[in-house]
Structure formats: structure tokens, C-alpha cells
Amino acid sequence: MRFLLDRAKRAPAPRFSWCGGAGGFSMTELVIVISIMGVLATITVASFNQFLGGSKDALAKERQESLNQAVHRYAQTDKELLVQDISSSAADETRALRRLQYRNPNEDLALVGSPYFDPRYNPVGSSSDSTYRLRWTGTLFELLKPGKSGTGLLMNFEGTDFTTPFAFPPDFDTDGR
Image 1: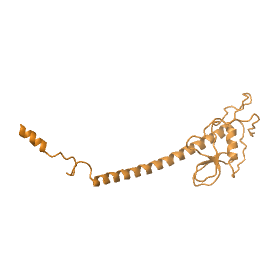
Image 2: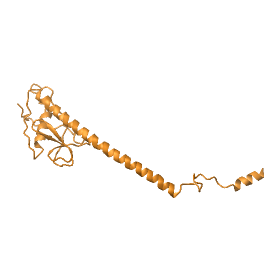
Image 3: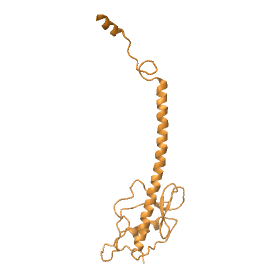
Image 4: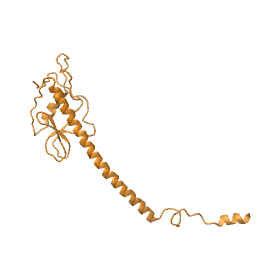
């Protein structure tokens, strides 16, 4: 029995490397694993960027459609939205948006269904051709995608353009007929 105990003390430590070397990873194994992880990360980032671009496009189209539906609902109340197209500034877009957001505080004078668009929507104007913008054409809103020049309401995808509702002055005129 003593012989077995002495032999167990002298036995070499078991080797856990698949290539027969000492325990742990070799430099070659580490380089291979890191290379594979780099290739997988590259594929993932490229797929994510493509997905993100498509979602921005979809959200911008949805906002444009929502504004145009509000214009149609406004027209159904027998009012025409009279805001002239001014291509050099976003004042016309803001003015058309405010008409869609207004509800007369006097319930007897308020238009049925107003406000037609969320009064908390407070975008800023932009003429940067690297952003999504919504431009007023005189009758409807048009989506300007990155790469297309023009001035309009800046599409903010973080939601920070939804703030406290716009405070309308007491003598606000909807300019409709």
C-alpha cells in the first residue's frame, strides 16, 4: 500500500491541453480565437448599422404619414390649411404644424376633432442634407432623406422633440378658411 502512495506522489500532473503541451492556451490558440471573435464582431456591427438605417427610414415615413393624415382631418372640418410654402426657412412647416396642434379653449368655437396632431411635438428646423427632414409643400408634408437638399422640420429619433405642449397666445389665428 505504501508503494501505491509513493507512486501517486511522483506521478506527473495531468495535461489538459488538446495539443499535448502544458496546461493553458498556446499563443496560436489565442490568436485563432481572437481572430474568430473579430470576424463575428464585424459581421454583427455591419448588420446592426443596416438595421438601424432601415428603422430610421420607417420612423420618418410614419411621422410624415401622421402629419399628412392630420392635414386631411383638418380639411374634413371644412377648413383649408392656408400656409404658403417658403423654401428658405422652416417657418412655414412650423406654422402649418401649429395649425394642426391648435384647439380653441372656447369649446363652442373649437373645431371638431382638434387638435389634429400631438401638441407636445416641438421640432426644430434644419437645412442639413445629412438628416431626415419634413418639408411643407403648401398642401402636404414631404420627407427629405439624407442626401437631398432643402429645409424642413428636423426628425429627431431620440424623442427629445416631444416636450411640454406649445402655449398658444390668446389671439391665435388658424388662418384657415
